[in-house]
Image 1: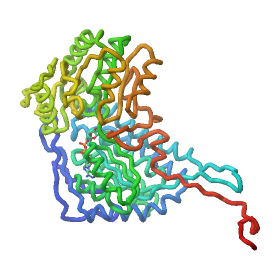
Image 2: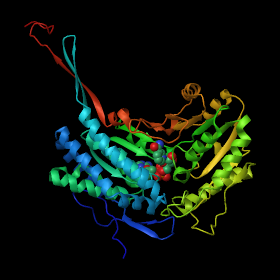
Image 3: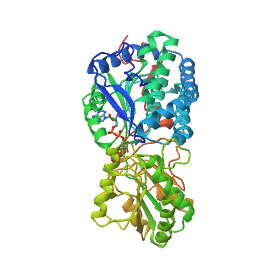
Image 4: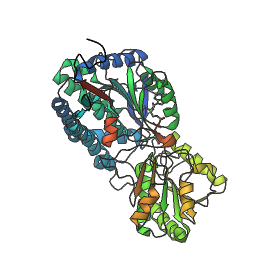
Length: 491
Ligand code: NAD
């Protein structure tokens, strides 16, 4: 039996005549989900609902708001299988990795927002002539836009802090992956309506493509926009918000570098590079697809790395043994293979990986992990995001050369350094143009971490104290010790 199409979750009800869209499961090639694209009218109503609900929500005591966020976390944990299956079915990510990482992390983000909310009392200071209050006030209506590679994580990272800080939010998931945000929206709608029907508009989920996204971010009532997506999308969103001087957090693409120093332990370096390149089958904004290795280690590193990569098990996302699943779609897999084929035509060497468009064992959305070497330093593959399981290995002779190569891209999201000398590695980290640098690790993201990029990789940070603060504005309230005679005017 097929499920009915998903509809946007909007307090005043979805509108009719909305277009039907389909999501194909990349692991099977079968229909996964049908959903209806929100109309302009639906988006506008979601924003109006949000504006009405927000004014009241901002006055709700912190403890009550925090309790709601904790309850959301609890319900995410309870329905972990449902959330994980949604994302896996739509983007092909491994079910095991979603259950071990994404779903518990999403619940943790809601708990963290509750804790930060309870700890965020206004600070009072006695100053010359009065009392200064450092307060935080909500933006009002926020818009959140998610990418398809980490759908639940994107939704949680935007919805939790927005509600905690007293805002309302309208969230739009990527068109490839509507279900987990829809499931989260359903949970929230139920909890919010249990509290008070006035709260129903606080979190709406609108389903749609870039036109829906554009309408959402350009609406004059939306004051804060958080987008996870490509640089091209970030640029359009930035432009759309310019006239209203909107506040932004833009989490955009990356072209990260991993530097393996001369003194690195080879096993650690290989482990870190595997993690940096093949998590989420390489469809990760932080993917370190440029691995710079000191020339003295290069051959030994490449041989060991290639052996490990050849041993990765490519298979269906719901099998426990699978380590690499399909990419999000056949079209995306083709675009990854095309980028690699172009680099090979320009002289790069493929150490391992199957680049044929027709896969015999699985659907054509699978790309067996690729390792490339002998690539020219100015090859376009080293400056464009691949977003697939492709690692490029490059030798370097001096640390200066490695830093200069690592920094030679417009992106600045993440980087990694592997060395036995942590002090040297940490000093080197400070010279890399990247919002996050991992030393002897990769992709670890504790809740305290402010995550985000420099340069074209984005604006602002998500997570940690800084990410939480982004969802409110600083307000200074000065309470004067007033007397009629000291105001400069005659009584
Ligand atoms: P995308 O830019 O195509 O789409 C992202 C979202 O933006 C989607 O929901 C899409 O519908 C929406 N969108 C597109 N155009 C829009 C517009 N003009 N106005 C408003 N919304 C618009 O990206 P994608 O293919 O879904 O995701 C992959 C990209 O996301 C990669 O570049 C990846 O690096 C990046 N990403 C970044 C992070 C990070 O934290 N920095 C995390 C995950 C993914």
